[in-house]
Length: 237
Image 1 (cartoon, rainbow, N blue to C red):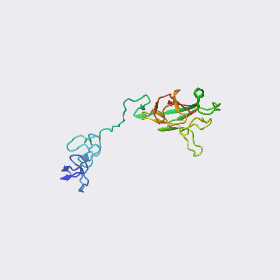
Image 2: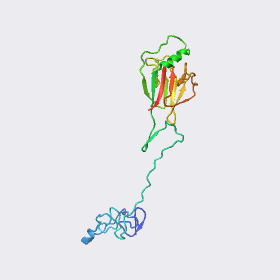
Image 3: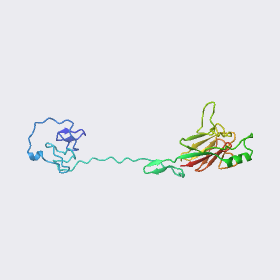
């Protein structure tokens, strides 16, 4: 009586008669000559030639002694991928393409807004006189690729530069160095926070500035006004 690597007791010493596993060590035997019919015997299931008088087929584990079918190996259940779901998802939530989830991308468009400048000056504007709307101010398109986007003017002395730098020509003198920030939310939308700027921050042409350090939710197409003439519009791509 022999024991196979899987622990089964078997009366055969070459293949386990329970699971079909080859014994870890097969005792040497004197060569035995068999009839040509035995040597040429093939497995009726897969056609593989039977080795010597082996009990099981090398390929499919067909039992030549009991004439039982191939030994079936239990298959592992298919792996399941888990995707977190969120209730109450807004229109800016990630979109699903096949089996992948692609979050939306956003862009900030920065331009000199003449209407905003006119209203700012008509309302008294920042202290001081002699401000003029820039003759040439190219529109900027800035991808919002980080969770937190800073808005302001770079410090020329230290070189510290915000993500949306309004010190580039034509420099908006009404913008504070650390004016405001955009913060991405868990549903991929954005909130605006004024960082206690000197001249304040307004949204969508409102007369009153938003409260400092209080997040204000934004949606696709909202306009953020800072400084004397700068309007920043956020777009979902």
